[in-house]
Amino acid sequence: LCGFILLLHPTFLSAQKVENLDFPAGWAGTWHGTLEIFNGSGKVQSVPMWVELHPIDTSSTGRYTFGLVYGSKEQDWRPYELVPVEPQRGVWKVDEKNGITMESYLYGPKLLCWFTVQNNRILCTYEKQGNEMIFEVYSGMETAVSTTGNGTHNGEAIPEVKTFPFSVFQRAVLKKE
Image (cartoon, rainbow, N blue to C red; front, side, top):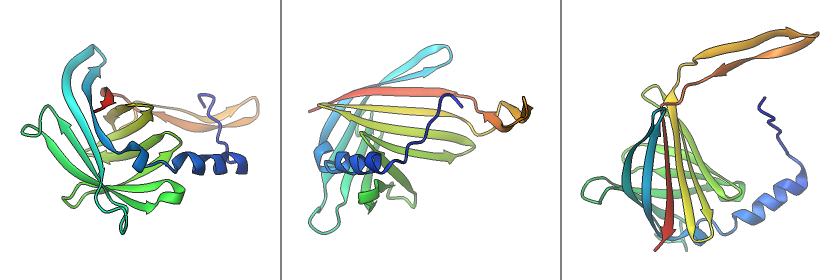
């Protein structure tokens, strides 16, 4: 499916752990840029954005601030925290400080968080590239727009495949201040 290959070779897994050693300390700082928001018609909005990632007390808990700002702190300030769960396996939680905590996964250079809310699927990605952080959000309804497969082709069993719609794509290239 889409050329998807899952590699679980031991060499791949050990290299993954080495790459994760600089997270979150190597990502610490204040990152700023412009969030561009797109739908099927093109770009619909641009908003200033910041990500603030700073140690709270790494000597005892390993927690970091994970603040998100859209527009300005007065308009939309989200003072989240990044909490280690199993950092050696790349597992973290984003604590929104309101009863919502979401598992997030560090795979190579990307921190990934995939969740559903109000019948929408949302994938948020953060990727550090030198002195830049690429932030992306993919979202769409949780209801499939089509279901295909679920039969046989030339004697081979074909799995059922559901596709889901996209409604919004957001992207920001943030530079470290």
